[in-house]
Amino acid sequence: MATTPAVHPVDPPPPREITDLARLCLEGDLEHDDINLAFQSKLQAYSSQGHQISLLWPVLFAAVQYARPRIVTLLLSQGLQLQTMYVEQAVSTGSKEVFQAFLDNGWNVNEPLYSFRPPVLANFVHDHDMTVWFLDRGADPDARCYIDLTPLSFAARYASIPTFRVLLDRGSANKGQLAHHAVERNTDVITVLDILASRGALLDELQYATDLQSWNHESFKGLGTPLHRATELGRLEIVRYLLDKQANPRARDSKNRTPIDIADHLGFEDIANLLIMY
Image (cartoon, rainbow, N blue to C red; front, side, top):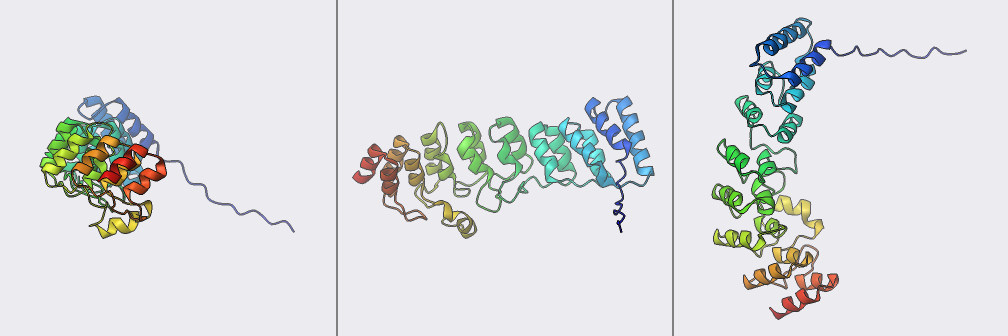
């Protein structure tokens, strides 16, 4: 005997007001009287039907995407929760006004984006103006995520020298593994290492050696000193600089390799010969 297939209830379509409100975000913000009137009307109609405020997340996302800080403020005041996806979109949008709306509604600027991504300041170290803006609003260059990775870590690797100095003036040279990140720069490596040395940073320490949580998570990768990494990258002048700063060519990384071992393995004969001389 044939059985009747089970009938599963079909979810109703989302309220039309969600689409209408998102479309209004594209058109402008609430300082325009016509948009303000239409938005408030649609929002009232939505609320009067008893729909959950959380269903308006596409509207808040659109408001962030199109840099509509007044709409952002209104929706957050209605009870929408500020989630990571909105912050990520705000990074792409790059609007100070949207970030200010977040701050005005209780956003913690020093909260990591994810477990292994530091706070939002790290995303703007390439932009001097935005960097200063965030610093003036309480962003901490040393705020980390699960591992010792900070906005200053990103600055050591990517920022211009003036921006790096501004961040370092408000942070620490001994947090964020800065010398290790500086070795990865495309330009001005020695300039950044000189700045760090002048601020008391250690240039010959195993990465994460003083941070057990980070070490336990990352040591399988072969954590070494800045000299290990400069050798691995084949950067002769940086190797020479670090050796002149008393870096140890016989220090062993978390895989028991010395810089000399790495140079030999990779066929960097000139670097290997230099390392052996020290």
